[in-house]
Amino acid sequence: MIISLLFLIVLTVLSISMFRSFDLQEKIAGNTLEKQRALETAQSALQYGEWWLGQGNGGTGSTCNAATDANTLSQMQVCSNALATPTTLPWTARADYLPPNMLAPGGGGLATSGDINYYKKPGLYINYLGLAPDGRSLLYRVSAFGYGGRASTAAVVQSTYQITGGNKALDQP
Image: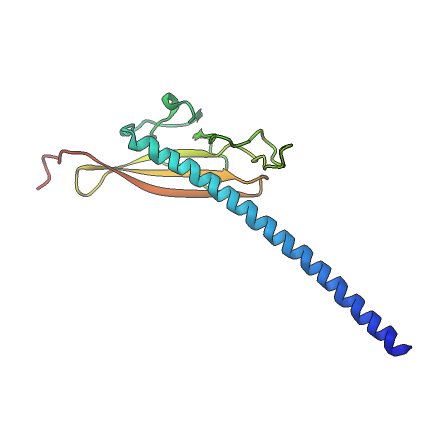
Protein backbone atom coordinates (compact mmCIF):
# COMPACT_ATOMS: atom_id res chain seq x y z
CA MET A 1 0.00 0.00 0.00
CA ILE A 2 2.82 2.43 0.91
CA ILE A 3 4.69 1.58 -2.28
CA SER A 4 1.62 2.27 -4.41
CA LEU A 5 1.09 5.64 -2.64
CA LEU A 6 4.72 6.59 -3.29
CA PHE A 7 4.33 5.49 -6.89
CA LEU A 8 1.17 7.62 -7.21
CA ILE A 9 2.96 10.67 -5.76
CA VAL A 10 5.89 10.22 -8.18
CA LEU A 11 3.47 9.96 -11.13
CA THR A 12 1.60 13.06 -9.97
CA VAL A 13 4.83 15.09 -9.70
CA LEU A 14 5.92 13.91 -13.16
CA SER A 15 2.53 14.81 -14.64
CA ILE A 16 2.59 18.31 -13.17
CA SER A 17 6.14 18.93 -14.43
CA MET A 18 5.16 17.72 -17.91
CA PHE A 19 2.19 20.10 -18.04
CA ARG A 20 4.38 23.00 -16.96
CA SER A 21 6.93 22.05 -19.60
CA PHE A 22 4.22 22.00 -22.30
CA ASP A 23 3.03 25.42 -21.21
CA LEU A 24 6.55 26.80 -21.45
CA GLN A 25 7.04 25.26 -24.88
CA GLU A 26 3.78 26.81 -26.06
CA LYS A 27 4.92 30.24 -24.88
CA ILE A 28 8.27 29.82 -26.64
CA ALA A 29 6.55 28.79 -29.87
CA GLY A 30 4.13 31.73 -29.64
CA ASN A 31 6.93 34.22 -29.05
CA THR A 32 8.94 32.77 -31.94
CA LEU A 33 5.90 33.13 -34.20
CA GLU A 34 5.37 36.74 -33.10
CA LYS A 35 9.05 37.54 -33.68
CA GLN A 36 8.92 36.01 -37.15
CA ARG A 37 5.78 37.97 -38.04
CA ALA A 38 7.39 41.24 -36.96
CA LEU A 39 10.55 40.46 -38.92
CA GLU A 40 8.62 39.57 -42.09
CA THR A 41 6.56 42.74 -41.80
CA ALA A 42 9.68 44.89 -41.42
CA GLN A 43 11.31 43.06 -44.34
CA SER A 44 8.25 43.77 -46.50
CA ALA A 45 8.51 47.50 -45.80
CA LEU A 46 12.26 47.44 -46.49
CA GLN A 47 11.77 45.75 -49.85
CA TYR A 48 9.07 48.27 -50.73
CA GLY A 49 11.50 51.12 -50.04
CA GLU A 50 14.20 49.46 -52.16
CA TRP A 51 11.69 48.91 -54.96
CA TRP A 52 10.65 52.56 -54.80
CA LEU A 53 14.29 53.68 -55.08
CA GLY A 54 14.83 51.28 -57.98
CA GLN A 55 12.04 53.03 -59.90
CA GLY A 56 14.27 56.10 -60.25
CA ASN A 57 12.89 57.97 -57.25
CA GLY A 58 16.23 58.71 -55.58
CA GLY A 59 17.80 62.12 -55.16
CA THR A 60 19.64 63.77 -52.30
CA GLY A 61 16.50 64.34 -50.25
CA SER A 62 15.38 66.95 -47.80
CA THR A 63 14.89 67.16 -44.05
CA CYS A 64 12.18 64.77 -42.88
CA ASN A 65 10.29 65.30 -39.65
CA ALA A 66 6.77 63.88 -40.08
CA ALA A 67 4.96 60.67 -40.89
CA THR A 68 3.70 60.16 -44.44
CA ASP A 69 1.71 57.49 -46.27
CA ALA A 70 4.01 55.23 -48.31
CA ASN A 71 1.04 53.65 -50.09
CA THR A 72 0.64 56.99 -51.88
CA LEU A 73 3.78 57.04 -54.05
CA SER A 74 3.82 60.83 -54.30
CA GLN A 75 4.25 61.05 -50.50
CA MET A 76 7.36 58.83 -50.42
CA GLN A 77 10.54 60.79 -49.82
CA VAL A 78 14.28 60.55 -49.41
CA CYS A 79 15.58 62.18 -46.24
CA SER A 80 18.85 64.06 -45.97
CA ASN A 81 18.94 63.70 -42.19
CA ALA A 82 19.68 60.41 -40.42
CA LEU A 83 17.21 58.82 -38.02
CA ALA A 84 17.53 60.55 -34.65
CA THR A 85 16.45 57.60 -32.46
CA PRO A 86 16.21 54.37 -34.48
CA THR A 87 15.63 52.29 -31.34
CA THR A 88 12.48 54.21 -30.31
CA LEU A 89 9.45 52.97 -32.24
CA PRO A 90 7.51 54.22 -34.05
CA TRP A 91 9.81 56.84 -35.55
CA THR A 92 8.49 60.39 -35.70
CA ALA A 93 9.67 60.78 -39.30
CA ARG A 94 8.71 57.75 -41.37
CA ALA A 95 6.59 56.49 -44.22
CA ASP A 96 3.85 54.12 -43.07
CA TYR A 97 3.36 51.22 -45.47
CA LEU A 98 0.45 48.79 -45.38
CA PRO A 99 1.19 45.75 -47.58
CA PRO A 100 -1.73 44.25 -49.51
CA ASN A 101 -3.93 41.88 -47.47
CA MET A 102 -2.35 42.94 -44.17
CA LEU A 103 -4.67 43.78 -41.28
CA ALA A 104 -3.38 46.52 -38.99
CA PRO A 105 -6.37 48.20 -37.37
CA GLY A 106 -4.34 48.93 -34.25
CA GLY A 107 -4.22 47.09 -30.99
CA GLY A 108 -3.24 43.72 -32.45
CA GLY A 109 -4.96 40.48 -31.51
CA LEU A 110 -6.80 38.18 -33.87
CA ALA A 111 -9.21 39.01 -36.69
CA THR A 112 -12.59 37.29 -36.89
CA SER A 113 -11.13 35.12 -39.67
CA GLY A 114 -8.53 33.82 -37.21
CA ASP A 115 -5.69 35.68 -38.94
CA ILE A 116 -3.48 38.08 -36.99
CA ASN A 117 -4.21 41.77 -36.62
CA TYR A 118 -0.82 43.45 -36.57
CA TYR A 119 -0.28 45.95 -33.79
CA LYS A 120 0.55 48.85 -36.15
CA LYS A 121 1.46 49.45 -39.76
CA PRO A 122 5.11 48.89 -40.61
CA GLY A 123 7.18 51.96 -41.40
CA LEU A 124 10.26 52.83 -43.40
CA TYR A 125 12.81 55.60 -43.65
CA ILE A 126 15.11 56.27 -46.62
CA ASN A 127 18.25 58.28 -45.89
CA TYR A 128 20.62 59.61 -48.57
CA LEU A 129 24.20 58.70 -47.62
CA GLY A 130 26.10 60.34 -50.51
CA LEU A 131 28.15 59.21 -53.47
CA ALA A 132 29.83 55.83 -53.56
CA PRO A 133 33.62 55.70 -53.99
CA ASP A 134 33.21 55.02 -57.73
CA GLY A 135 31.66 58.49 -58.17
CA ARG A 136 28.78 57.07 -60.26
CA SER A 137 26.56 55.57 -57.62
CA LEU A 138 24.25 57.06 -55.03
CA LEU A 139 24.06 55.31 -51.67
CA TYR A 140 20.95 55.12 -49.51
CA ARG A 141 20.21 53.59 -46.13
CA VAL A 142 16.76 52.02 -46.07
CA SER A 143 15.51 51.33 -42.54
CA ALA A 144 12.22 49.65 -41.72
CA PHE A 145 10.32 48.42 -38.68
CA GLY A 146 7.40 46.11 -38.20
CA TYR A 147 5.25 44.82 -35.37
CA GLY A 148 3.74 41.44 -34.67
CA GLY A 149 0.37 41.16 -32.97
CA ARG A 150 1.39 43.15 -29.90
CA ALA A 151 3.45 46.23 -29.02
CA SER A 152 6.19 44.25 -27.33
CA THR A 153 7.03 42.39 -30.54
CA ALA A 154 8.88 44.63 -32.97
CA ALA A 155 11.71 44.20 -35.47
CA VAL A 156 13.98 46.71 -37.19
CA VAL A 157 15.88 45.91 -40.39
CA GLN A 158 18.24 48.02 -42.44
CA SER A 159 20.01 47.85 -45.79
CA THR A 160 22.37 49.96 -47.83
CA TYR A 161 21.03 50.39 -51.35
CA GLN A 162 23.13 51.55 -54.29
CA ILE A 163 21.83 53.12 -57.48
CA THR A 164 24.38 53.34 -60.29
CA GLY A 165 24.09 55.94 -63.00
CA GLY A 166 25.49 55.76 -66.50
CA ASN A 167 27.96 58.67 -66.32
CA LYS A 168 31.08 58.93 -64.23
CA ALA A 169 31.87 62.15 -62.42
CA LEU A 170 34.37 64.31 -64.33
CA ASP A 171 36.76 64.58 -61.39
CA GLN A 172 37.19 60.77 -61.22
CA PRO A 173 39.94 58.99 -63.20
